[in-house]
Length: 360
Image (cartoon, rainbow, N blue to C red):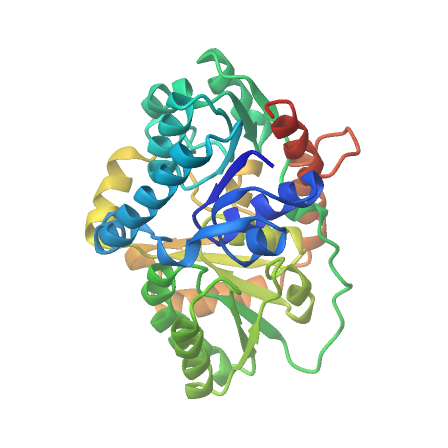
């Protein structure tokens, strides 16, 4: 298949793999176990470049530069007809431009969140997109006004089956510290302290470890869990969804994980911390009231948000205990599922694959 595929982090790897599976595999580029398992030739491992925030990006600059050179050289040597580029916008903007300059048509999947911060970025991305697959319907307008052929493909997290939640003698809270090294290290200490406080209140905790994390980070999570008498579970390749039925509530960071948790029907708390530089940028650039995706999509706080200094261990533990008392998780999940699912009956992977096939 004459296709470049590029995904730079765990969530993007899963999305790209879903589309590749519908295409029948093939292609070459950057990704993780999902892209590799879907039959693509992985030239750059996404785990080497996944970064969060300005400081983390700077620390990974050498790896990002190596990735750029590898993919750029592969584009020149192989001249693919099309490129499937998934999320990871700051890196992929340059890759998309390179691909277009060499004659490839670019299908971009997961629109940069210009509706949340720095809407002027539309002008930086639009010229390099042949087609754009957006996850949320409200994103269509801004991109179409910029002349981009944008199509709503929905969010695959809404398609994952969630086993029924069983009753337990003691409540269990899932702790999801993140799917990238930098995010985990920014939140793991907080999660460990929260687990200690919850144990004193008769609440058990289980740390859910992303399958995309390097082994050394997975070991850090396991050690943190042992320190506080909690369990650790490694998530399957499709993410945390299959394990969330084992829990009565969840603590998550902002972004895709918060949506995945809400779609499982579990009440949740979003606690998110970033460095001082990233926080200053966010305060100047953020234009939404909420940061957790479920809250943004439903325009109300269906899950408590505690950010920066507000995310103290005591405040987070209190919020989780209140979350355990909620009984509206199923209704919230149903409302979100309707909000992120097109009515055509197709699956996410097939919708994205059809956009790619039209460019091959």
